[in-house]
Image (cartoon, rainbow, N blue to C red; front, top):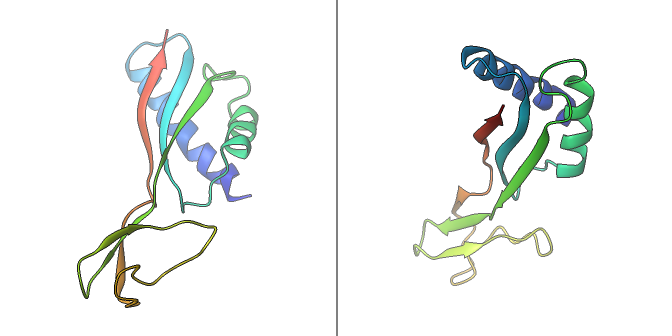
Length: 115
């Protein structure tokens, strides 16, 4: 349910941008969402539709680009993909648990398409 408050914040940003640029209607919002951000695109759209009702962003499409989760081992420097299927939080090369997240937590507006 955290998508509801996040989509409310996205709507505020979008409406501010649209207002400052004289937009009549928001058509599409292009987002980057990290693989481990735990946001579900279908719910994001559902909640955005709810919060944007009766605004110039009503019926705007959310276009979501998924950013893969990449981890780096601090011990040996190996970078590897994290997948939710194996939940591996240790290095694929040396098995060290001393790792850092390089990408996969993103949540950003890339662009806003308006008329």
